[in-house]
Image (cartoon, rainbow, N blue to C red):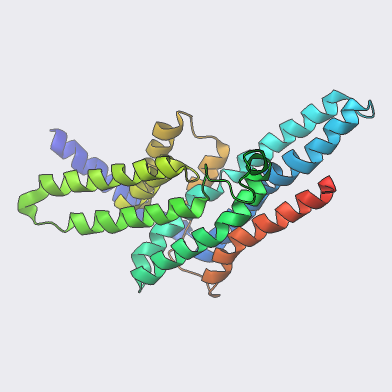
Length: 283
């Protein structure tokens, strides 16, 4: 009885997934642009709005030139902008899985992730942790937190292991299962130890999206489960917008090949925001 019910549910999911294809119009490039815009809004808010602008407003408040309510309004507005930024990471995780599944050169794909993770670390530390690194005398580096590309690289390694261990013979299914679970937990632990952005949340999301890669609805369910499990939060509007973007993806890259442009965009936009923040602070 239970097996029959599960079979019906599974058939419903695959039928629904097939019907969704009629509505899918977003290319990979479209998702990357949406993710990048969301990320820029988030980073602008954290680096510039909550950095230089907030600092200048606090100075004006202390001098009696501005009411404290104005600062609270700005902060409330900033928190809404950071909410928009939550759209970016699920989309980047999904695109990572798509890239992993369709790339013709896995080694080059992983190598590029690691190279740009290393190249992005200095702009990332300057943009988000320059004050802390000055306090700890480690400027311009901050060693207690790493950029999100390290999380994506660890997610890439997780998928390598999941693929490898899933090919173990049927007679050793339990061993295969244990190795796959073990690899996910291992990279979750590494992400926590190096304190890469999104830490184990990112690894679990990537693993879930990869495991359910053949069905978009299953991907959304596993993503939401990973999100709830790791954050303890209910998915908000912006998380659901990210889910909608994943559902509307048509499986095509887009006409223009922008792979390296998107890799380079991450460190460059953070560096520009750091320079803008420095200019506004008058340092």
